[in-house]
Length: 365
Length: 166
Length: 63
Image (cartoon, rainbow over all chains, first blue to last red; front, side, top):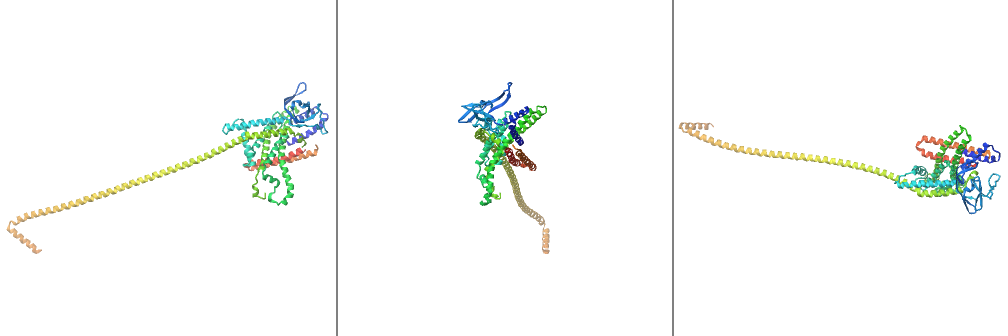
């Protein structure tokens, strides 16, 4: 999967060069598919279920628009249907906006977008707080989770301590997170404080990963903004609940084993490394989740694309079988990534909330 | 890196943070606390039930042991009672025997004494009668003998002879 | 993108692959030797693998 990312990153850059040259029909088809997969990986301003070509050659999109919220000299709110899937200029309160490469740019009435030599638009970008497809899916997941787990909580009260209904399926997972993730990593004493976060983040990531495998094509956990937000929360919780020992471990890792003048040259190197470690831990979390989900979607998209590329009796079934197998693996990956994110978060919380009693016992440590 | 930064969208970041924190707070209040509490309570309940079952089992064992002890005691008591009764019976019997023996001995002794006395009396009586009879006979014999003068003289002579000899 | 950078990223990925493979293999050995310590070994394995994986990602996204 790592390899595929490298491949796709490479492919993307090539594309820019190729676009200007003349293309054969097969190449255009290839490019279209690449563009389609890439588009699928990105967030979108409208919820597109599917698109098809009408008899008259127009492309029809089935789906529904989502609100665009911009801060550009005041709040600008309008429906994404005004963009007509990037084909037209949207006008709101006398301002004109146009979509280019899935980003909103401020333009004039004609919708001209100027590019620099790297093929990047140079138009002004308004602050974009649009309620995109990803945000919509997040909201949907939130509502689903809230309904699911409050009904589970209520069923305990109703049935005298025994869960009932659909939420019951998740009770073993809740127990697993408590007994096999939280308690071993954080410790019997302090795990309770972190349980709500661990449970929420596990189910949130898992559900969004699973939604990513549906044909609706939402790639929320494979979006860097989402994983940054999740990892940032882990980072904040880790450092705000850090005990004295945790900070001491960062700023004075050697403790009393060395006199202060001996520490100075060492600490010039050690403390920056420790501080870097604080940032690298959540960074690896966010990159891991992003890369795994992104890679899964690229592989699946590519394999499905291969089906149409081969158009032969052998190639298409083969790529179908491959896509099917990869889908099964992706179901596993969806669970595994949620597990690893939760597990590592719990581990970091464990580091932060640890009380080092054993330091006194073994000063050599 | 450039690709990542290019892909980063502040809007989605904002929505994700807001929605996720709302979800976290709501779920913490309305779902996780009740669920974890219910699960904890249930586990505590199971633990309690197990402990109380264990306690009941122990109590049962104690009770059984108690019963056993009481039974043993009762048995011992019964045995001792029986033993005592037997002893008492034997005592009574032996006592009764002794008394009877003594009584019998006494009766026999008395009877013997009476018999002795009677015998003595009878003997004395017999002696007296014999003496009287012999005296009477002797009188008669003497009267008959002494009716003849020759015979009297002869007797006197004989007697005198006897006397001289002795 | 220049070819040397990509070759470097590829080398890093090879290294990461070898590293994770070794961790997985050693964990298997350890589990075979001590099946009762399965949980602890798995946790330690995942943590180590995750840390190495981080280097791989860093290399890929540095490209």
